[in-house]
Every structure is written in C-alpha cells, then in structure tokens.
Amino acid sequence: MAKTSELDAAYKATTYRVFLPGGMCDLRVGEACEALRCWLETAGCTQFAVITAYNPGSVTTDEAINAERQAALECDLLEGNYEPYAAQNLPDAAGAPQEESCFVPDLAVEDACALAGDYGQNAVISGGLDGVPHLVWIEEIEE
Image (cartoon, rainbow, N blue to C red; front, side, top):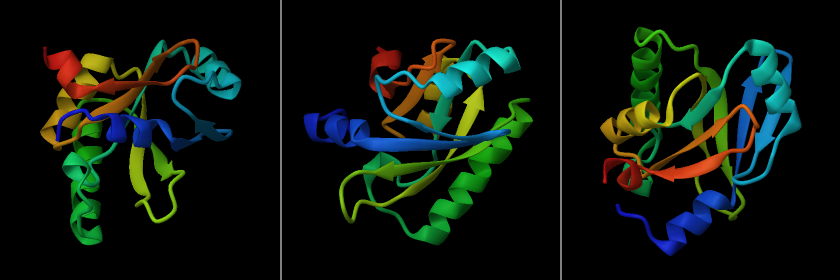
C-alpha cells in the first residue's frame, strides 16, 4: 500500500515502545527522547531503526502468521550481525492492532527500508544520535 495521509497520520499517532538494557523508552515520531539519546551515546551507536514484519501493507493479518514473519525478521537481523531489541508499536486509535517490532541500533535507514520492503512494510522509524525518531516511507528511499 502506498503512502496516504491516513496512514501517515496513523503511523505518527503511535507510540514505539523499545525495551533496552537499563529500561524502556517510548518513542513518538518527531519528538526527542533524551533516554534514547543517552543510551545511543553510551552504546556508541549513531543511528537506529524500528522495524516490524507484522501486518504487511497495513492489512491486519492473522496473529500466528504475524508471529512467524516477525521471527523470520529477527533471524534476518541476527544473520546480518545486528542486535535487535524487543519493541512494540502501540497505536493511539482504539481497536487498532498492536504490533511486535524490533529496535535495531546501527541499522542504516536504507538497509532498514530494504529489509522492511522484503516484509511488505510501508515505512520504518529511523533516527540518529539525537534520539529523534522519524517516519521514513519505503517509496521515498526507492525513488
């Protein structure tokens, strides 16, 4: 599914909760997270991404299929020598599906988008050392 104003708004109206050694961070698109900034600095990381394999194309998919896809994504990340941490995508909208995801330090936005594209995703969350998460649409990277 291509970028639409409705999807853009929905992705921005989501909390991206990441579980890092030492604590949890709730990320919002465009909002600095000081705890994440400090963690990145301490860990020596200059960039990050949040990526999921759940609900490809933003179409709600069976939970068992989502779990299988997410496990495959995690294996791909590990095989790529990344260290993914557990994360959750928690939409503000009542009834919208929550998704398991991965917080991946040092995953470049281009690589995150390529991998997410392999799993039928529309976008990823990506950011740098400043700890500000950005919504990045796959189609913007491919153009």
